[in-house]
Amino acid sequence: MSKSYHYVRFRWWQGVDLKKASEELGTEFSVEPIELPQAGISIVRDERDELKVHSDTLGAILSRFRAVLFQKESAPFTERDVRLRERILELYPRNRPTPFPWEYSAEPKFEVEK
Image (cartoon, rainbow, N blue to C red; front, side, top):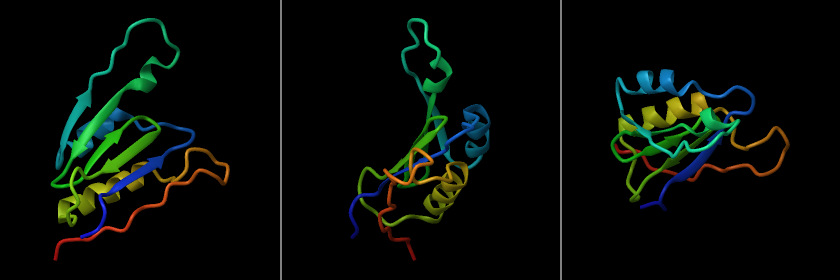
């Protein structure tokens, strides 16, 4: 069995509309908002919203500019896991947090159920 799966993806300029993503992903996957404290005045208040998305063994934490894909326990991806991974990679097309060529995130190997 492979190591536990943990992978980070990014968007650079225009963030994901989390409300729209929630509606779209919610047709097939479990989606729930992550409630974060909103105290005080902040110019990045709207940037703090996050969603938790789950398929069978794969989960993702989505913010406007970053997605973290993970498995709590190592397991082969199911068909639904593969669809969630593909959709997240479409929404977050970059593997590094900036346009500069450093700090990239390499996707770990994973198995798919047969």
